[in-house]
Length: 500
Length: 117
Image 1: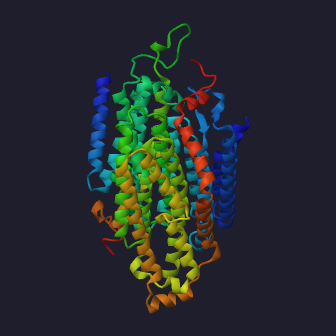
Image 2: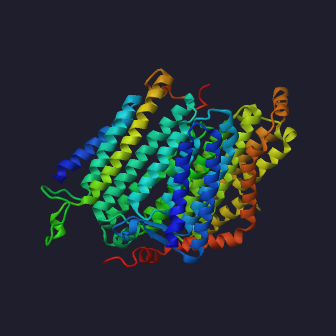
């Protein structure tokens, strides 16, 4: 019973907060209070879930008391718990980062309501044990993110939302067709029941459906040939929103891939997982290469987000406990680091008045503490020790070497080098290079309010902490990975007491 | 019957994709609507098609004689979600055309700051 309370609280808290934010209407103070308190509640619920999962391994809730193959099941394992905790964390920091902005501009914008709906969608998706239910949460995430992206109504945002919406809607339609065809093939949509029956199905059809779902989730996850919507859109909304998107949203697609390509589509790894490896390698390289040429800071970061997704995909493609563990560790690292960098790009825009590298400079001289704050997550993303990025990339490389995929390892190392160059370019141009007189004057006038810097400080501290606690954390992700690979236990636990 | 539905689904998806690939904002909207009809029909047909069968199992009869109610429930959900998304797209396209003063999607370059400005 208590499992049900833990899991529903991760959904009810953000849904209720969203509803209260709508009810708060035009009272911005009430909206902000509900928005932040609700996110704190979600983070607490996520930590509670993680604590429960640490002892009980797999939590199952049969919604409405309908047993597994017939009703909708919510299932939480270690991976789900990690993702829910990160959703709560990013939601909280994004809500906090948006406070000063929400005060200055339009108080009626439904930012907090949409944010909480999106967080609820993410949490539901991470805990879903049913494929159609997964699709419904996926749509909730998509629709609320459309609303968030267009908040502010500038022309660039409207254009960006159109591109984002068109490609992601096509992706969600592919997801829906894949789900419909899986039902036609196997007559069930419960993930555990699907996993039980999928081995008996014609392997060619199963692999084809796997490829369809790979493309569908790959669009959302911004994989190599499917990522074009991301750098065309993520740099247009207000910084708080693009930070939340950059950290969390692509990982929704990646989570779906991690789940489906360990639970369902594993009968033909020579095709499906080799495809994941190839796409992952290309994603790493193309993202990092494209990042090098960017002048807009947030566009540059968008390409780095894509590049980092490649590492997770490679870890998933290795289909070993070491590879999956590295993928999960990398997901934690990359959510923390990229969100921090997006927050800092918001601070840069605030004090320099521009987002373009050629119009920045002299920040080390005038704002040394901000420069230090940038350096921590930037070095982490570039993969230097002792930060989380070093351990994360080391994990992927080690897992690749163990599986003798030397080309993939070479691609990962090359992409890491290119990432160092891309991040180093931001450092040189925006921070180290002396700025002009006009810029120096502007920097002297504009300060960074504590509340705006705090979320980035928290995340920068966290990336150091993850690096320091890499041992215990990788034990945890290794057990999460072993859990993912143990399909039998998943099926048994979810379908316990089911007929047949 | 299945063949007819399969051909219809294929045609709807093909027409939808063709319209999506045009450079016109109105075609984009129409493409998304038609594509979603195609996918909804696919989901509806995924449980198998049966004439004159209700989704209720009569007492003492085998379930094989009845229609599958699940795809019908799924497609209702999908239609409602699709309706919501399409309403949003409609307003978004309206705002887009108003902002660009043109329905030509090649004019949507302001967000690509590197090329224009």
